[in-house]
Image 1 (cartoon, one colour):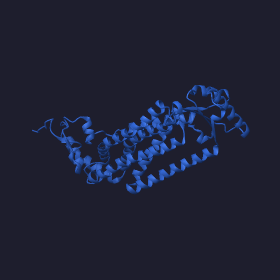
Image 2 (image 1 turned 135 degrees about the vertical axis):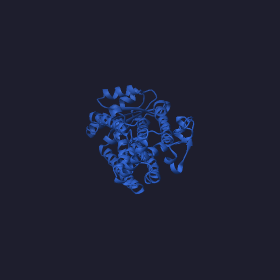
Image 3 (image 1 turned 30 degrees about the vertical axis):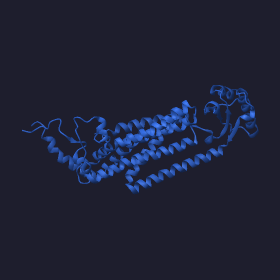
Image 4 (image 1 turned 60 degrees about the vertical axis):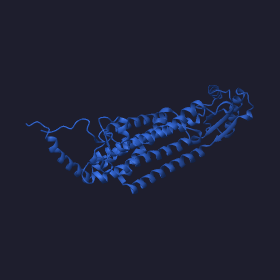
Length: 365
């Protein structure tokens, strides 16, 4: 008669054979989910459920693409050129400034407040690049006079700055060059450090994060400024870091478990992701919480509204980066590798080895 192990028996966090040289044991009947998470003992099937996350990402990207085609991105004057008026006033409101520039015939103006109390400034930006030199100067002075009168200031107190479209084109060109250099760098590094299929999976995950961030900006209508570009490049680097942490564990487990024929590649990826899950979540939370403080406290409480554009890019990008490293990059890698003959043979051997064990529990026909 077969004996049944008592439910309180101690078992490995993820299996002693699976963990190999890093065996951790916990009492599975008593351990909470948080304890299992910290010990790398969760059993979430990332790879086997990856199709659902691919669909979710696809829908988010499609929604962003639809918004992008319908309304485009709200570029600041640093990209498209235009004029900005800075009014140092503690009393002038955004609604009043918007009404004044609209009555002056300036359309699609962006009005934000900078600072608070005595250091408060109202900034108005608008695109006047279609006007000729003399007509643009006259319009700039007209708007400045109206704003100064409403704020009870002399016209000279309103600072006027013009940014030509050529300057915006130079910034755009520099941003594109930086992005291309970033992509080339990560592909070369991961290909040399790991392998080209890991580089391909990481590249797709980074593109995913970029598309999600751009889509959110198109949906929200937030302004795209040079600080936004800096934030995007920052979060792409963070996404890559998180992905490399997972890939490094996958490489370690493949060498100790898959190559000896103890586990197939997809299961090794699932194991690696569960082992690094706590680190990924902790790193993401530690990064996102301060940025949320900047976004909420700085932009909405202290009035530094320019932080809103920068903070949104960081929050969206960091969240998307943590998501893509677990649910996009690693599952894609598993799909790439499972097509290799070597890992197909390992999977087939494991299935043949496990078939008699599974058949023992079936009733006789």
